[in-house]
Amino acid sequence: MSVMVWGCVSANARISLIFLPQGLKINSATYQELILEQEISVAGQNLFRNNTWIFQQDSAPAHASKSTQDWLRAKKIEFISKDEWPPSCPDLNPLDYSGWANLEARACAKPHKSLDSLKLFLQREWRKYHRMSCEMQ
Image (tube, rainbow, N blue to C red; front, side, top):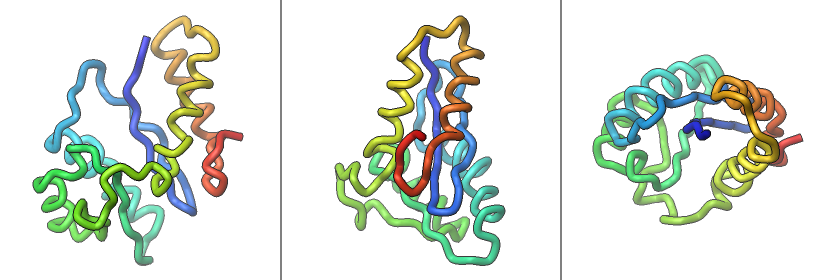
């Protein structure tokens, strides 16, 4: 049993996990529609209001595509462009550095009866994610 999730953290907060549909292939269009439009645009306004913030992604193809970079520019979201981002540098991304591995290890430590129980477990564990230490508490 598996599930694809997306998450986002800042020094001030974390966005609730986003559960993506089973079998969905993430490309630039789905990333822009399901994550950037529905989550980042809204969360940026809610979390930071009129303060300056910079959106940081990794170098996944959907993140680094010209289409996604152009979408962010058009929406006036300040971000680190793919030209400024090291190609493979998980220590600059706390979720890639340890967050996802910790969450996966906890989720796989015991079997889940259903996809819904797995999702509930992941949501509970995600709420334990400590943004300053980048560790699950």
